[in-house]
Length: 156
Image (cartoon, rainbow, N blue to C red; front, side):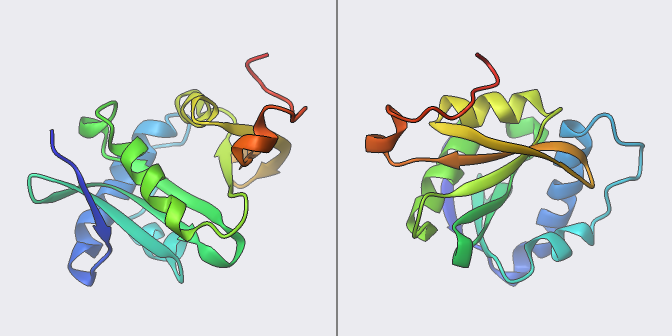
């Protein structure tokens, strides 16, 4: 599958709203049906840089970055397109918008996301409670710091 990453355009909004709900429903299986709404996409990406993964002319994933803090706020891939390199391509494309070591919050119960980020050099900085339950604040250190860091790693 050929994937291209591009900037969000307003014509993407409806497709990304649907993708956001489908992805959150699949990833956050512990939430009750109907917990995720299409308009949540708008609120969760307001003021952020949004990158869109496209395959066969259709959005299949997106990432959003709050640039002032180098914070990766969202990274979602439609369930039908997961494990095909879409998330990795989106994550790599976000690099251009990180001005300092980037951070993200990963819901602790989301084992797939946690493993994905850990395998790509992110480390747990702290844990806290949020509206979706306990989460991990993760940071990706520059390669020179990564090998010397003593940050906690949930996988031991």
